[in-house]
Length: 200
Ligand SMILES: [Fe+2]
Ligand SMILES: [Fe+2]
Image 1 (cartoon, rainbow, N blue to C red):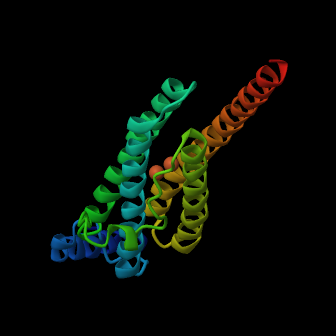
Image 2 (image 1 turned 135 degrees about the vertical axis):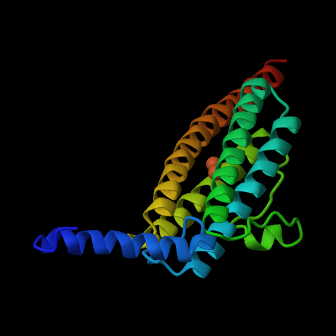
């Protein structure tokens, strides 16, 4: 190395130091000394989001298989699509937890306690859609909070949560459109039933 080139020398020394630290902490995987977040808290928060997603998968699956009524086929298809997307969110969260040298928690024991939302089955199509909409709205709120917490300290986890959040917003929108359509038709059916009985 040219000793007269001080700036380059300092730069190379920095690179060497970064490489040395990377080798020294190789067991840390993707977590380097530059990682600024509180890893234990991030792992706990990501595991809670994982639990939330797993509960969402179960709820959408239950709704998919039990949807009955005039719109049941279209709504059941939508439930199945959402179940698959929630599963995708769970997979990405588990992957990130492992990258951060943590353990993704798939233990069914305590799943509901770790989740941000409870598991509600719903009796009819309107109830089911309403439960799903509420669950999506809770996910949107809690994920927004997680994104604010992560800030610039863990940009990769933040970006992951932002992607998932955008998808939950689409889910909430889908559910609110469905809810409107299905409740309007249910009302119309009740009204025409009353008219038919009154006409007799
Ligand atoms: Fe999700
Ligand atoms: Fe969702």
